[in-house]
Image 1 (cartoon, rainbow, N blue to C red):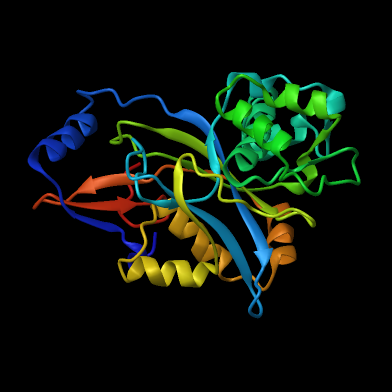
Image 2 (cartoon, rainbow, N blue to C red):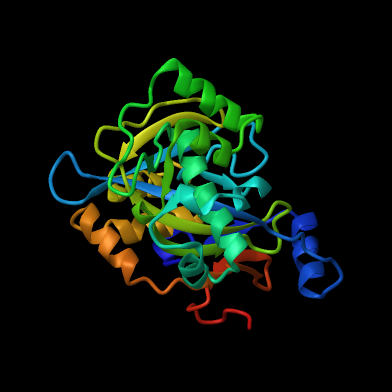
Length: 289
């Protein structure tokens, strides 16, 4: 992460410093990260060239990333692995497995989780009745009941598609990044980032739940707010927004996703002699090997 986006975390309490040192020494085993997916939902800017990204501010009571602005996403549901071949269009799971550095079952689950979580958290559904179709208006009460059923896990994503006669549009997603939560965190996620365009005829909705605020924002505006201390962003979100700010439109982002070589990134938190903490990424000088 470039220094202007906060690679220094400042001084930490003594107990946290001790925890970091114990992990570095192998005295404490960090928790295993949970597989997760997140989607950078994009639309062309309404005020000139560039894109806008959909961001949600997580409730301040959340156990992870409280008060932070994030993209729609969440953990894989084990049932995301089970999807009939007939309910999937676009690049097959075997191809996604290569793109996501995963086996076929996990790749299926990651793509399903990306589409499911986007619907749960934004009301946008990347699905249609056929390969050339995307469902349009899904704001009715019966769709909201289905969204809530997905949230409370009384309905699986595969069951939703089957009941609605829909297919998952895997071709609307592009792989973008792969971030793993640092080992010092008590809650860790192994997250694949995808990019997708807001489908024609659909609109995002403030559906509440884990978020207390939502917004479409130009990436540069979000980063400016972050630098001014008016907006909380975790390093993966800030880094992704910085990347998005370089594109002139959604089509450019999707084209870049087609050519993307996605490699896992594990930020590491290192302590200086005076117990200042810094986040280092693999291409930073001093990144521990």
